[in-house]
Image: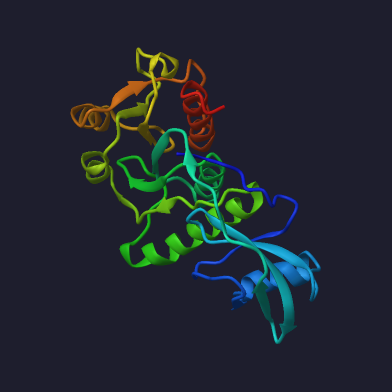
Length: 249
């Protein structure tokens, strides 16, 4: 669903996974400390915003910076930002790492509910199963940074890479669409209301056999016009289009 922007946009934002209560004393992760102290030049007494990725946020004050650790105290009332608008479940075929990271970043900013990297016939990028967790941590870090920057308090669920057929047969949504240059129907012809599953192919796109399998699972092939878009560009364009057609923008 689309997300409300929080009311503390003037404060530096920091994601904190653990739960917290009023007046709690919390120690931030080393990566957060480096960014706050070395990059943003934050000092003791400065206020920041803490959010948990599940809709909650509050104001905290830096009380100490010692040995690479930043300790903060919750000083504000915890607020909640509800999700609004259409729910979007993105299935993005594995593409080159930088391009996939960019797609995850922008999909997070555009408020998707989940991101599922897909193993497809034409995927150039290959990931060994034993590397899934390391890759997922990287993607989560990108998503967290995007949330910190854009003011959203909800993190999308980022799944392990899965086979296209496994994702397409298990995903549940009111509408299911797949971007495909050969489609006779444009994305603007689809009516979006409550939820949508969006499948985006790799460099070279989905094979005709994969499109046939997706159609069997209830996906409608749609085009974005005559331009051939890079996979990461297609993701931004399609997500923005869906938001607009659903009345979120």
